Structure formats: C-alpha cells, structure tokens
Length: 231
Image (cartoon, rainbow, N blue to C red):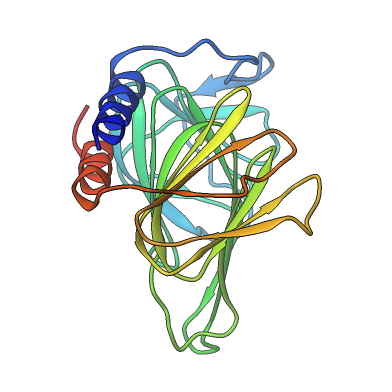
C-alpha cells in the first residue's frame, strides 16, 4: 500500500512540478509559430478544452504551429505538444477526453465517429510524455475502438479511463475505470496482455510483463484527480 502511495506522489511531482530530460526535442526545429490560425485538412475531429502554459498545435504538414487556445479546432494529423510546464485537455468527436501532461507530445492519427452508422474508431500516438485518456462509452456501436500507440505498445479499448506514461526505457499504464484494456507489443503483436480496472503494468522495451499489479482504488482515484486538476 505504501509503495502505491509513493508512486502517486512521485508521479504527480514529476508530471506537474518539474521538467523531464528528453531524448529528443518536442518541437521540430523547422516549425514556425504563427499567430494567425489556419484550419487543417478536412473537417474538425475535436477541440481544445483547456490550456495551461505553452501548448503548440501543428497540422499534418508539420510546417506551421499555433499556440493552443480554448475552442481551437483539431484535425486528423494534428500534433499537440505541451512544452515545459504546459498542459492541455482536448475532446475528440466521439466524446473521448485526453489530458496531456507537461513535456508530452500526442498526434491524432484518426477520429471517425458516425452516429447514424453507429460506428466509431479513433487512433492517436503518444511518442513521449504522459497522457490520461477517458474513452467515451458507445456500447451499441460496431465497430468501436480507441487505440493509443507508443514506440513500444499498442493499447486498445472500447471504454476505459487510463493513464499512459512513455519514458525513455519503459511504458507505464494504469487503468482507473472501465472495461479491459488490451495491450500488445509493437515489436511482436502476438504478445498481448489485458489490464482491468485498478491494474498497473510497467513495460520494458520489446517485451510485455508476465504479471500485473493491483492498485488500491483510492490511489487510482487520486492519480486521476491530480491529472485533471489545474497545475
């Protein structure tokens, strides 16, 4: 129990209290920041809901970035970068919410939600940093999938609240609420584990853990609450 409390305290301190040494720069050197926003290709697939500090949104062409603001529309191919102590929250067209922690980068690969067809598929990548995902529940939709890809794992779920932390050597995942989260290895898709509510896994590069850890409910709720409060 004490170890879980220590994990939550350390995670919060790292996430909101200080910068992390990064293996690669968050913001590409050749990207220019423009004060005049231009829409990305296609229709919007989400929007920015909250911003603290410096957060940049870059369209798929990766040539021009924009300072994130509340209400800013998001498009497929957009990359959201939380610089320094900046952080942001966004919502996709399927109703799923994402909170991006400081020193983190996330790309919206696909977001296709069709109410009349009762189908909803979303895919994002998290190459570095930390994010909390609250995946919207659509029980009668088929297909229904929300996928998060890192450099080591692919996480899939129809409905779950979970945290994903991509560090230099490991990926860490904690499921707070919802259905099972399917985790497969990028290097070997045949490797697969299921994480259920209140379970935590620490994953080394190239391999999945043979066991997962349980986390006390209060610690999991504390973790989720700290992620969504104002830094």
